Image 1 (cartoon, rainbow, N blue to C red):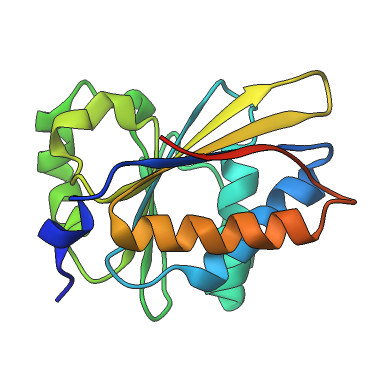
Image 2 (cartoon, one colour; image 1 turned 90 degrees about the vertical axis):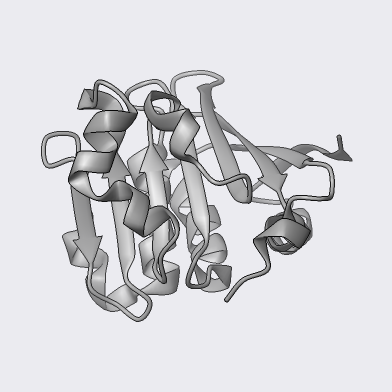
Length: 183
């Protein structure tokens, strides 16, 4: 069992980078996917077409490559489950009216379960989210470039973010890190 109380005692840590192609966005997701473990929660916010599902495709490529062909935006299904060890639950909360809808769907069990939980449009269910999580924000820089902002809450997520940032900084040619800072 994870020690969630200890994970939330430290301040949040942030990091941002820009990607210039969907393949690069997916590659960053893949790096993160290789690090994710059972019980981890990643939220993804941003405009439609901002790169969230592309990033999820990368996470699945890193965490469960045998499921990569299953990745699609769950906007209409609300949940896509990728059968792996651990299981990956990919929620799109865009169509939810709030926390009650999420509880009805069983999302709460996945938030505190033994799988990896990925949530697009988490603002619809903020009250349900555990404090230990990795928040990703996707913004348009221009037609082809995206800025991905990471905010790690909790010790485990901060360690994970540090590993991703180190890898991105080591690969400066395809990626352009903007800043790496503790908040």
